[in-house]
Amino acid sequence: MALSDSPAAVRVTELCKIAPADSSTESSLPLTFFDIFWLKFHPVERLFFYQLTSDSDSDSNSFSSVILPRLKQSLSLTLLHFIPFAGNLIWPSHSDNPFLLYSPGDGVSLTVAESDADFHTLAGDSIREIPDSHNYVPELNVTETEAATMSFQITLFPKKGYCIGISSHHGIFDGKSIIMFIKAWAYICKNDNGSSALPPELTPVIDRTLIQDHQGLESLYLNSWMSFASLPGMNTNPKSLKLFTMPRPMADTNFVRGTFRLSGEHIKKLRQKTLSQLEDTNQANLKHFSTFVLSYAYVSSIIIKAKGLESNKKMILAFTADVRDRLDPPIPANYFGNCVCSNIVQTKAEFLIKEDGLSFVAKELTMLIKGLENNKGGLDETRKTFEAFMKMDPATTEAIGIAGSPRFGVYGIDFGWEKPIKVEVTSIDRSTSISMAEIRDENGGVELGVVLKKDEMAIFDSLFLNGLKHL
Image: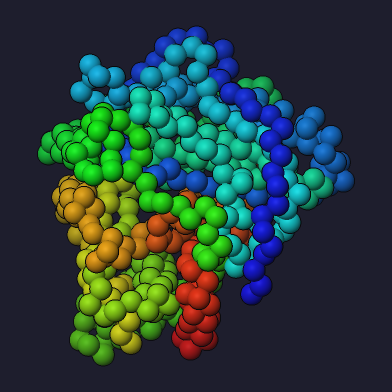
């Protein structure tokens, strides 16, 4: 697969703030321990690419006079349902905990831009250098004392399409919540009747009393984050909201991103292969492997081989699980905010690169997921994960995480001018993570985003395709 040329220039045409329509009342909202777990993690960044299909839509004047105004107006109407999230995260010196505060006049940042880059390359599957995407990701403003919850950028590629970029603060939103917000925005935009009405499944529940902290996790997480201030090179203000981020290789053309797909038929064959390997080792007590588990196991084992890691290298496979329906008592599916438990499998690279590496990872992941049912919504595992993260040494440990989910339905998000032709989780280039989504217009398949060095990606590409041929 050919690499794309250097990213083209992006011309910012407008910087503005979108405030909730007709809101003049101050509003605040506390964080829960689910939120505080992610307080200083890097933001999650997504790009939604939409193609201009009709002659009228392809005209730049039509985009400026029809599409862009509707996107702005509907965003303002949508924010009426999410008032505290139109404000900022703050942590005053007199407050024990950070919290969200909306004051009249607050709003979310929106950048409007134009680009002459190759739209179809950006929205395609070819392996390309990671800086190609960065010009379309909005900056999330975070200072020591204040942090934006989310920011947006809409970039027009004249006569080709447009991209909606979203940066969301991980301490405010889990994946399900930010996708719910985008779906609500798209619903109001598509209906275009001046109404802010939403269907029940897109109407947020923000009651924080639903989350009960029986294990004292809020204090544990807050104290741990504040203790980071004493580390060399870190901010000395224990209540700083600055993010603890992995360095992004912004101009490093040695890193590339690629999109890979596992069809429903591939998943079926992976399941069969996994079960046959377990039967060979008398471990076939697990009767079902989910699409998520099989996809994660297959790709992570190939990443380890592509990186050429030494067999004794420590490995962490990390993923989150939605626990809204696992809490006691369960909370509504449309609860808005973080409500995921974080889970890890700790092992060594040697177990992933063996011939039965697929079945080993699938078995470990499945057993961990099954254990969540009897583990208070996975809170014990989340505590262990947080402690492992705080102690992790990147020099001796390789971590592979997951961003997104095939269950989010990102390819169904239609603002009124067709569904997206590509959705990218751009932020996976900040760490070794895999993005997951459903395949557009296909049932049962998984689309996967991967970021690696060029030489590693060449090996990964070959192993991925050859592995599927021999299922």
